[in-house]
Each structure stands twice: as C-alpha cells, then as structure tokens.
Length: 155
Image 1: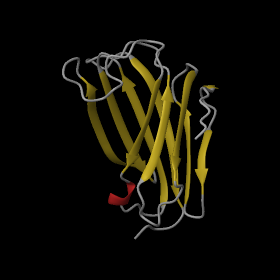
Image 2 (image 1 turned 45 degrees about the horizontal axis):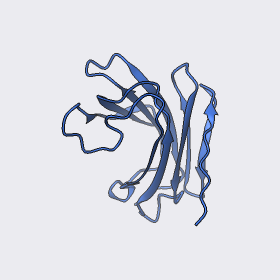
Image 3 (image 1 turned 30 degrees about the horizontal axis):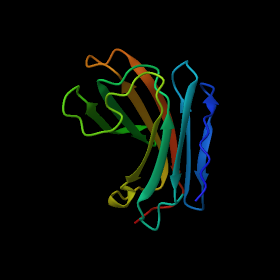
Image 4 (image 1 turned 180 degrees about the horizontal axis):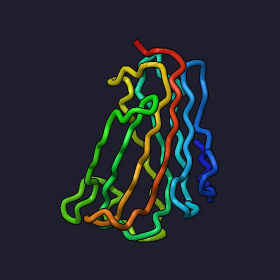
C-alpha cells in the first residue's frame, strides 16, 4: 500500500472543504490569526446511514505538548447546544500519543468518531474547537471553526 504524506499551510479565514454528499456538508476554517501545518479528513461523508466516521489528522504543533486541553462549543441553528471541555494531556500518566510531543514534531493520528450514537436533526451546526497547551487555558495553539450542514433528518 502506497501512502503520500503532505502538509498544507492553510491561511486563516479560508474555508477548507472536507466533504459533501446528498445528506451532509462539512468544512472548516481557522479562527485564529496564524497559518497552520494541518490536515484533517473524515470518511464516509454521510450521516443518514448511521455509520461511524474514520478521521485522519496530521498536525505540527506550535508549542510543546505537556498539557493539552480541548474545548468544544456546538451551536445548532444559532442556539448553543453543547459545551464540552476535555483535558487530553495532564503531564503525568497520559494515554494519548500526542502528549509529550515537542514543538515542530509531526502528529499523525487516525481515529473513529462515533457519529452513529447521535441523531442529528436537519440544520446548520457550528462547532468551535479551541486547543490550549497550558492548564489555565491561556496559550491557545489552535482554533478551528467547523461548519456541518445536515441536509435531512438522520432519524
């Protein structure tokens, strides 16, 4: 099996299209002012058949990863639907391979997103992801604004 690894330096504010299908559209932009060496993709591009998504992420962080916190905010048709905060790296006994990586090292990971567990009503979703490399959450190392348009009810 042949693989090609590449990095794309994305410009802030420019939308990156992930996928489109008869029932789903996914795209994202960076919401901070710094360009990133980052790629992300997800398959399959549908939501109706209730399959889990396979995701692939490649990223070169701008700082060491001793501590890592992700904060998700989800809006559905303009109303706040979810706020979720997860400490991924605490500096001791961390379970993720990204923990302990140094600035400039390449993070390459594949994982499953359990979309089949959630029934998404038709509508527009905005998912804002803030990633911080410190405990008081003052050093933001990435900010992504995902747009998900569900074209038909998944239930």
